[in-house]
Image (cartoon, rainbow, N blue to C red; front, side, top):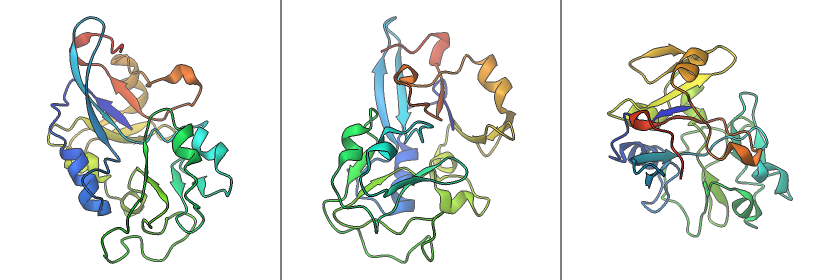
Amino acid sequence: MVIDLRNCDGCKKCTEACQETHHLPQNFEWIKVFQVKDKHGGEYFMPRPCFQCENAPCLRVCPVAATYRVADGVVLVDQDRCIGCRMCMAACPYGARYFNYVDPPKYDNPFGHATPEFPVPQQKGTVGKCMFCVHRTAEGQLPACVEGCPMKAIYIGDLVEDVATNGDRTVRLSTFLKENDAFRYKEELGTGPRVYYIAGHGQLLDF
């Protein structure tokens, strides 16, 4: 995923689209929009989804292997295996996981039958997170946040195929990242985040 902070106006339509798609309560922001300032005085809005880390701390600490990775690199949570210990929440340096304190709204399972590639719906006493809308991308659709962004600031892509799109525009991913000096948040932690940011207003995002 690539998020172009030059185009994000902080409207939170990405958050709303995610909540509607996944039937989440308002305080569950799987993609959360922060207003931040850099050391140069610049102000930005920064959407934070799950970073689907290559070296995911949440995956390593789960004692029951409820957190797992599918073939395309997305990190998911098996709601039937999760015991609610919240060790993954403590391990995540991005605060991208949420504990289900109550039963979610009743609705038809949008994932159909559970398989290793598609998690079961959220359950009370388990942990949930952004999943890059694997149930949508498997059908050739965009993640809800990408589709819901009116500013077209969010791209979903594939590093192997070297392509990314925001629904209106398709770019060669490697060129797009290089030409715009894209960076990964807290990359120095060694987590290998798979979300890239393009800083706003020609300044480095440093906060």
